[in-house]
Image (spheres, rainbow, N blue to C red):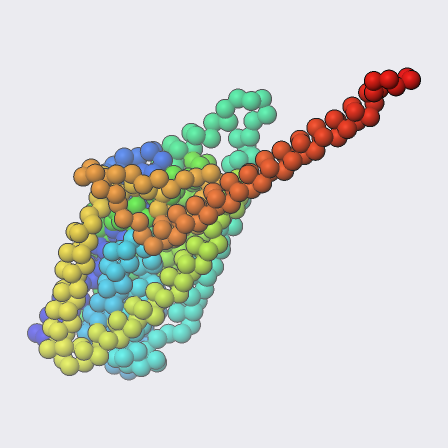
Length: 455
């Protein structure tokens, strides 16, 4: 009876994580078409939700990686108990909600892996982790996927601008790529459902195997696939507007052809990785694609300082979620009372986050008030772009995130430097003009005969 209750709690918590994963990653697919006006905000998230739902049924390879590869099996079965999985999910959800509150598009995937690994180490030691699977299907894809997506996006951007280049002074038609972005961003949403919904399927399947309710080395049941697909679709439809604001506002500075190339590269990379069973982060792939497209477009700049912040965030996700998962696992070792304590603390944290977020509400009406692009978005910024705050419906100015504040300072410094350079150039031109005039006067005085000159 007690084991059944724990399994039920794990399933409920896993589905809630799936929900947070949905609204956490909506921006990866839909921030750009919302920002460019290709899709209205509510239409975009509805389309993304439907495609996430469909994508969840296309493959189960990633789910098998989590349920049958990451955690080792021993004589008594898989080396992690449902209670430890419960603790790991708490670690993942805490990190997801914390980063969502601050509008930071961190990796939900790595938060999940970190939470599970931290809990598994506390519950069964380091031997519970399959190092080969962790390295080959989590760490290596985390390093290779952004680079691959960036290279593909760089090439695609170069090709897009080459084939639309005009020499006759007529419009090049690149603005029409805005409509193509609808298709490319939809493909990302489909790919996201294919990759990310499976992670929760894998967690639930792992729980059932650990509780001896399902045979090892078997895929997720149909009811698991359906419930996980619905959970991530509902999460996607809720919008995750804070992260859309973070990613999408600054993406208005990215030209439609460039955005299309980035989105197509992101979708291709995610779909290929899902087919191979690589549980990668869609946020990292999107970031790599946008950076690559920025390098590929003449006239755009890459903010390497922001790229460093992105990398730092990725670096902390696994250990941070792992630490929370490990602490929750230590409490869960107390038995059923420990699991109840974990559940109460987790619920309290969730309620606090949502209460805190209500003090600065972000929805479809004010999701993109400023060019505030963290993560993949603000890594690329078109020259001469300006950060211009826009008042909300209530007349208040939306608060900028730390990344946006840094962006504003960078923009102000760049504009001041540009003004100083122009002033120096004008001063130099004036000096040259005065000097030329003086030379001309001297030459004229030398050539003009004076009064009484015998000439």
